[in-house]
Image (cartoon, rainbow, N blue to C red; front, top):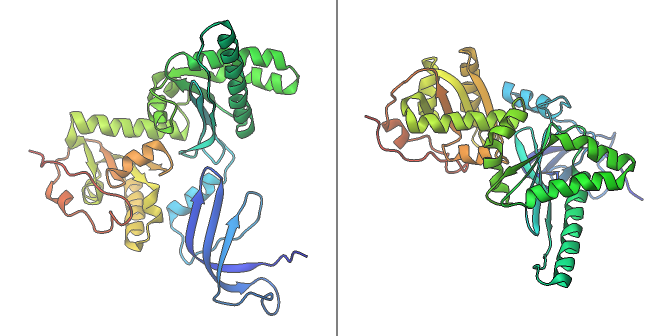
Length: 353
């Protein structure tokens, strides 16, 4: 017989698997939710692990909440656009390989990987076998897409890859919608105007960066969080090359620009708000509050998104400035301790003249 009890855990470790959608918490038991003693086999101070699941209620408490954490909680639990629901899906494919990805709340996750050996075309018999194998693989890709996405809720569905495989898949899916009929066929047919076939260098997840930068995709999903982050990072990288005094990166440079009211866009990695160092978390929150007070726009990048991984190479702190602001390059050389500990490090540059 299974016994349901309520436990209070002091969390000391958090493990998140975005692909499986699982959040595991490790810590020690501080109290139970029942009247009386703890259930048999449990004791105060004992190590315990919990797995949080969708639709399983829980309460979260902290001694001190910062404004960024509260905003991100509200945003992640919100079903409106920009909240927790996926706004964009992508199928990255090349013959025999497909990755079905969901992009929501600035996070890109591979929900399914479909691989199959496709025989080469030769004589008539081999060509027939290859066509059957290809159709079977496409059906598996479509099944994975239908399983992991809500086609009606998506703003766009991107089919990307090298060569003609993407165009052939869109054509096959259009014919498949007519063949299937019923509610599933109608739902697939309704979604087809949202499908966009674009070029990508490969069918692997890193190709999402070039897909989201495509002008056709950017125009279709201009008001989604993911597109906004990609555009903000692209602006930062362009100015870094053409007008380096119009950008800042690294905590000290960004702080100096913020104190002078020069920040137009503040770009931060969400790793900063989960740092083990309390000082690092407070630095990030303080920057956000100061930048907002001066009218700057805030972009928090998920470390699980391709653009977030790119921002991490600039220490996780970056800014686009309103005007050119030459900063002391010596500040970068002694960037705050703890960046490497948190997996964030600033690239070394030559001094600006």
